Image 1: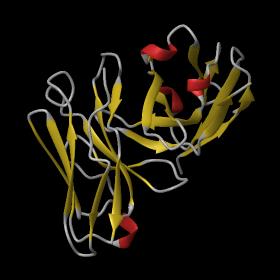
Image 2 (image 1 turned 135 degrees about the horizontal axis):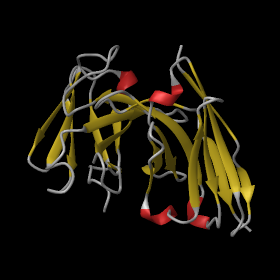
Image 3 (image 1 turned 135 degrees about the vertical axis):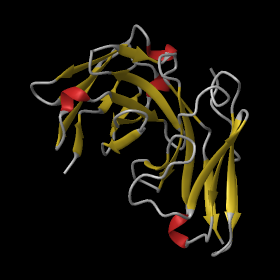
Image 4 (image 1 turned 90 degrees about the horizontal axis):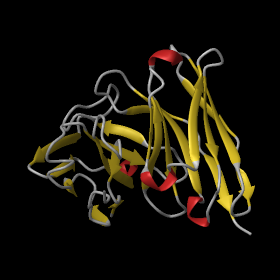
Length: 112
Length: 118
C-alpha cells in the first residue's frame, strides 16, 4: 500500500489560513475515519494535532481543524503563526489490516 | 507524567542485528498498544510494527521475517529486535504509545538512530 499523497510544501503569511490535502484511496482514507495529523518540528518527535478526522487533543489550538471528503482528508491552520512552521503528516489507522498505519508523504509548512 | 524513553541504536553492518528498547512510565503499560515508527534521514514517517495488549503483533511487509516486536509488561518495556539489516533500514526509530479507543499515537519517545553501513 502506497503512502498517502500530500503537497511537498505549503506557505502562508502570519494570520493567513492554509490547507494541506491528504489524498488516499477507497482502501484507506475513503474507508476509515481514523485520520490523524501530526506536526513535527526539526529534530523533534511528531505530535498529534488532529485525530479521528476533526478532533483536537487537549492543549491543541483551535486554529487547527480537520475534515474529510471521499478519499481526501484536509488539515486547515487558520491565523497562521511562526510556531506553526513545521512538517505535517497525515495518517490513517486501518484497525486490523496491514499496514496498520499509512502515513502521508509529508508537507513542509513555511510561514513567510 | 507519561514518559517513553528509548535506548539502543547504533551503527551495524548489512546483515547484522540490533535491539531497540523503550521504557515506559506514568501509565498502565500492559493496557496499551505500542508501536514502532521510523523515519529515514530527510524522509517521511513509516509505520514499522505494533503490539497490542493481547500480544497480537503487526508488521509492515518490508520487515516481516526480519524484525520482531515484543513487550515485557513486568518491566514496562517495549523492544524491537532488528535482524538481517539492510541499508534501507537506516532511520531514526521512534517508539510510540497508541491512546485508548480511537486516539492515535499520543506519546512518542525521543528516537533511536540505526545506521546500516559497511
